[in-house]
Length: 261
Length: 302
Image 1 (cartoon, rainbow over the protein chains, first blue to last red):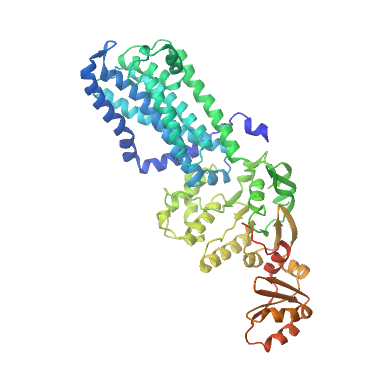
Image 2 (cartoon, chains in turn blue, yellow):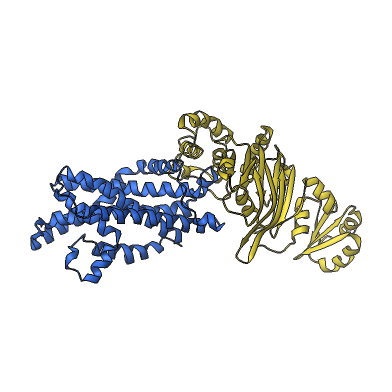
């Protein structure tokens, strides 16, 4: 019993059927979905980027718009993954009973979770790519370095998709997610160098920021958009990967505890 | 070989043991009914048999596979109609079938030719493109049944397949379930409609408080556990009459203001009623519901 709860996730290609289900639903609503995902970060980017940018001038040798663009690329990917793994996954798990229907077929809960995870990351990557396209069009993505930001965005999506699924496993209702969003994601966005450089923060706050996944995503994406290679890239990638793998294991254990008993 | 064999199955939630030593053996090709009041452990038993939750003790063999160890392989040849609607509201009728078939590893080109047959079986011919929201409760239930057949299963699990349906819809489902047994499939259903169990099931097991109290064919159970005739009486003056009835019938039971008299010969009871215009009565043969109420009691379960 308990061995099965704590066993490592058993990954199977069957989980792609779950991914395909979500993709088919999304295809029906793709345009409003993309616009909805993009509108908020783009309005913020252009508003703050040009507005604050005019006051702040240059920031560490780049324009504030370029600085903010890289930050928002990370944070909008984070939010897209989180929304999918929280609200959408919860309605499939709890409200629509989609998960229940799936596990009645020769599918396991691990398959369902892996499908959800890949899907959340895919949607996040799609949101990140759209954002990257806009940033490139306005001339703030240096090629070909910016292409290397794409796998980073995928990794950010995997990390936050997994974290979201872990929170989802504990959720009692949709309201539960506002705690996670307000108390964790919003402060994380402020601390991770999205709006302002982290170097000016006190050492303790900086240390906290460095323990958070979004910080590492932004640290990777920003130099890539500017046409350089990030310093300490391996460490940043390792932290993101550790968050993704660790949180997915946690999500698996918590979901099994919730549903397999 | 029995499609489903269960020995000594147990499942505990905290202090409460919801399945306490269940043994079941279902014969190939039969329709077997698992009956019991709410909270008797029926749904938990089904979920254990499907390997969706882990038992605390006991053995389960589902289509020759040890469950939960080989539950995935076993479920490949099982169809499930769950208690609550879990159709995909974002998909059309046909898309629901295609997407569900993919969970069995079926290719779209294997599923697509089967869709018209499945829809015809479910009385949904011509509705392939309909949205789920436009279907009635009965249609959704039939589509759920069609979905459970997408993998051409040997064994079907159905958790309260007709709960919430109107009589027309229920009769159509019954007719379809009979057809499935004629095709040689094995059916395991839970229900608390005794009439449904009596009509459909070759054998039933009555379950209460996590245990199977009795098993057998509906007719056997009625013959073994209850007198063949029932008279239900209510109305003003029931108090005065009840004292007399006790000596006339083999057994009487009281539920609120109604008295149930059980006997193999109820003529003496009926004779005393003919003179009493204010008493309302109903004379009928005993049925599975009488057995059920006798064995599980008349107390509310919720």
